[in-house]
Length: 477
Image 1 (cartoon, rainbow, N blue to C red):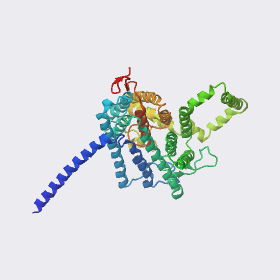
Image 2: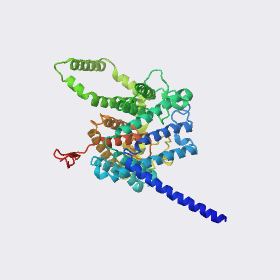
Image 3: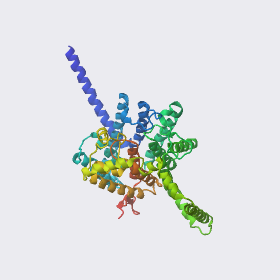
Image 4: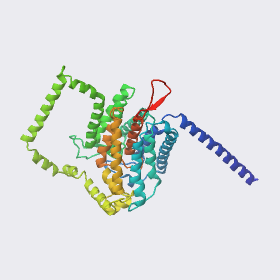
């Protein structure tokens, strides 16, 4: 009798499981057909939530360890499942959108096909080939994650980039607000002290928020302010709060690189927003007030610079500066030159395919005696060391192609694509923002840029209507 009941229960469970599978499949097909932009933009919310939760559950204390390594801290089991759930959602959103776009790819002539090919070539040369042919070959399911997300982002819905920008802007805004909330509750979680290399007199505290590092927080604040200027909040007081907390986070992070990037990126947005007006006013000879002011200010600035160079002992000041610790850090990129020497040595051992994708793991760092070297701290040296000359070739081809597409979509995005590309390029000097393994903040920034390009790209072969019949289309030659 017990066996009969058990068989009946198993049969009913299998029956309802089959019904549930059919229902889920029908629901998925309904989402594929009716969800115009899919679930891809919402990965920014879930990923930012995981970023916030990371250091809260790890319980770091930056008063004691200014730059703690997450590898030395143990994560609770529930946090690992939360992280896995976020990864699963990202993969689901990417696969759902990829399936939807491939089903209608023939009717989407505006897809940036050349950039898709260049991105896949980057994956092939920097992930696939070193995984098999490098000095230390390795295989992992994580290697294909960013490839799926990147291609799905490039196939983003035409002229629907506002959804992605809004999601990114809102998620980082929440991140900055929650980070600021810990200043009074647990300052050691978000602040490091005794920072003497800053340029703000008397400020020895450095703000990292809930990010991995103050430089990361500076990049997050910079990109948030770019998105906020490009797509403001509907409410004026929320805009004011966003600008305030964004500026304060950027300043307190004391990242000089991020300050320079912020000025350059904001200049890009300002040029595309007010460039036509400035050109019209500067070339308006009937009303020469603005051109005269511009010329006078340029002359005054040049005179001041020449006076400082000619009449001050600037050479000895430079020499005294570079003899200090701050000057030494500047010359060696805060010790990064030692890491670059290690990267070059690994490349010399296998110039064609490099060390492999497991470079800078625990075993490699223990062997070279650099526990802090979690990356090559340079996108060029990272590709060179991990994937060799083949990887660098793929990187250069992809960056060149990405730059061309960023230029092509700069006007339609009001300079946002160029600004984000510039941010990634400058960050690539000392960090690895284009490493297509894992879902960190740089990966999400890269994905946002690809989404905007995919949504804004207009092909030269866009179908247009003829004047004779509204239902007749032809391809523009």
